[in-house]
Image (tube, rainbow, N blue to C red; front, side):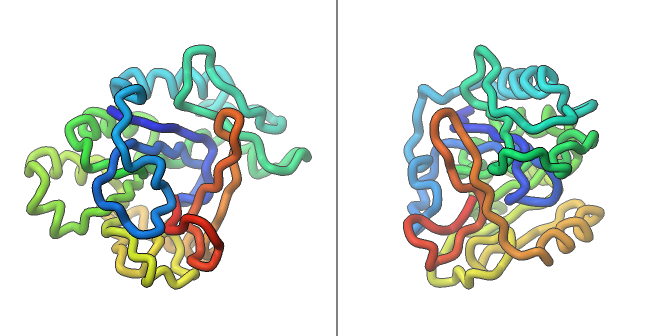
Length: 237
């Protein structure tokens, strides 16, 4: 599977402290896409889904996440053999109680790129992630109707079975209203495949859009749903 990065904890792409995974490769070419660097497939970023999850687990376990998190500031770090996952510290240099929960991973968000363009690998990844959390959110440029027609029926059914929430539809810059939470443009549909998640997501969206600046390697990247008038690339994620 082609994976660019995985970051934790991310709070700008769904409720709670989430593991966020960015896939590589997308043929849609949405105008003012936030992640144009992820359009082109890059074979150097290929990793087996089982290995990816193993590396994530090992990195989180090494920092005491998932069972009992550290009662201290987050320190950004890499596992020695892991170029995919960063665990993040807050922007502030002061301790922050938001980062001291013992709850571990609250959810997983998969974005890209276009995750459904790697649907066979995604079907192998999702059951492994479900062992970590029941709350899996996937962003896709496909509408539900497009996915029903274009994707292999059995694989698409597997994706829906393991996914709690699907945000479906291509980003349309003219429909970015600078307000809608979790979606880059108002044509995108939030599909609750697990109705038990609706209340938590609705409460999260009541807080509006969130932007989170995090460190990935030597760079700082901006995660979340961006406004049209923010300059540069928009669309979010």
